[in-house]
Image (tube, rainbow, N blue to C red):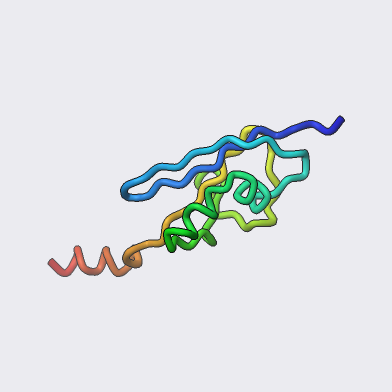
Length: 92
């Protein structure tokens, strides 16, 4: 019997936080976890791009392998580039 990985998939938006735990087989990837959670489908229906992903705060691609207990994060799109935001603050 294959060992199962318990993975948490999260998205934190301005007005909503989505969190779902999924059980996946060993060898599962970030993309597998996002698909299994169904969160990406919910966000896509709201027009939110789900292509920016990470594991515990580090950017990761859909093919990144997972380990038991990992937290897959779906990052919301930035409203403004961080460098531009700093420039604007410095200019004030």
